[in-house]
Amino acid sequence: MPFGEVVCGAPGSGKSTYCHGKYQLFTALNRPISIVNLDPANDNIPYPCAINITSLITLQDVMDEHGLGPNGGILFCMEYLYANFDWLEARLQELGSDGYILFDVPGQVELSTHHEALRYIVQRLTKIGFRLAAVHLCDAHYVTDAAKYISVLLLSLRTMLHLELPHVNVLSKVDLIAQYGDLDFNLNFYTEVQDLSYLENALNTSSPRYTALTKELCSVIEDYGLVEFETLAVEDKASMLHLTRAIDRATGYVFVPPHDAPAPEGTLEASSVPTSMRPNTFSLFSSAAGPMAGSVGDVQERWIDAREQWDAFERKEWRQEGEMIREAREREKAIQGEQRGKSGIRERK
Image (tube, rainbow, N blue to C red; front, side):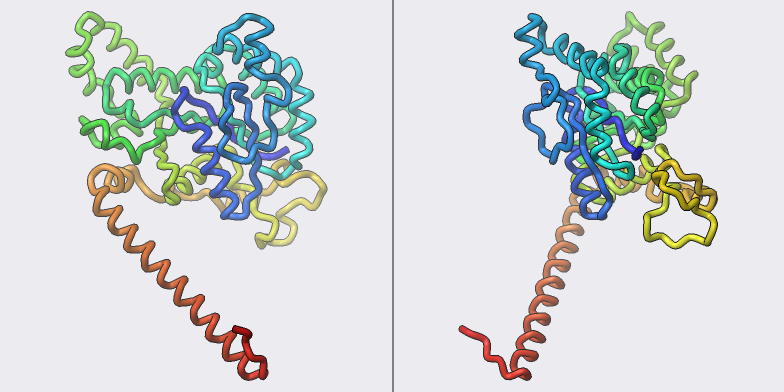
């Protein structure tokens, strides 16, 4: 079975937009990708959908038949999907064994924090051979408010403990963060979840009654020491590539070479087993070595400290690239015209 991502996060965090951007990126890179929509309330799907839960059950039918509200209806749909997992498994098998699957799940946070349906579905997927990572999207503007930032940390930690998958937390829409005011600290303070005691003054000022509770919550987050964040600007190619590399490390996809990649004889087992399940010690010891390229400081410079200068630089680069493409086409047309003239064929006007 293939590799994949379980894309989760609160409503409005950019899950469907991320899936669409990932589809465009992988299509440009010639990497196979399929997207599975598991959100029965998602009526405006921006991406090509390989499998849609609405083919099995719709939210409106559940609400009409059982008298449930939107949230209760979505929970019912996920429980119904788990009860009919064979339907999902059969359609996943049609996508092939070497693809890359994105599972776009509903935005109800209870699904990824304490409700069992999504966790059971993920467990069934791993049992049939999927190598998954949870990609948890959080809106980046929450870091501009200390109380909201602590709540996002708690949500991310609870999601990691509940889904029990390799996990990548992502601050999405980082390109819009400057619209919400200045940060109290550099961006890496928030992505690396550094000493939270520096936030206690701001938290105690806004909610002095809950000083002891705030201190204990920060202590829980630091005691686990699990939460960190990557950043994402979905329209920026460099940002999408960086996040893709991080996720490939989490799933183990980085250890699976492309079909046309050269490898010493005998290092890759020759069998009909999919590449995701084939032992490959050569790739294990020859890839994913060293730190990730890029840094949070580069992200802060691009989107916060010097955004206008970077925007102007990129526009200049795009103009030069467009001029180079136009000149190349003109040269190609001139060469074709010369070849027609030498062969005695006159171009019809």
